[in-house]
Length: 154
Image (tube, rainbow, N blue to C red; front, top):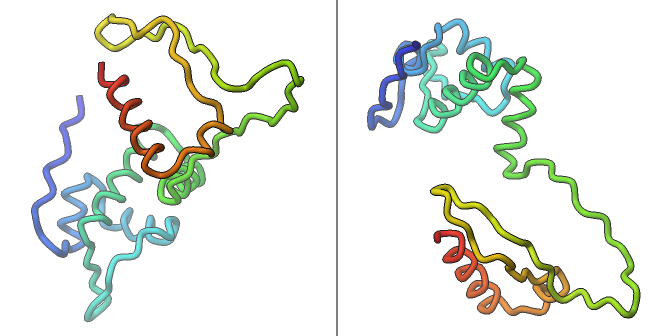
């Protein structure tokens, strides 16, 4: 079993040697990753000495996880990081379909949902479809989202 990585100390800047120890990779690997991952840009001072900030150490650990633990290639890891840092994962959107006039698109039953401890949620939960959500004001939408959060916490 591989030993866990050490905790990141509360410092503003880290040298390449410190980052190497914190992330379990050699300094030459860190320099190579700078070329491959545009998100990784340590500050360079006198003599081209690299200084990494806390968020960059976390990014390096994420890159290490993608490459070493999850088995991604450099290109695959680059794509994964691009999706994560952009805050958007590609999710297919449902196609919009014209409904017949006699079908009302107000709610849709979901059924029983299993919860982590073996309990089940209510048998049928009505979820408003998109047209109803659009009509809600910001405060109503916030209240609706809070009630959903409470249901999920059960």
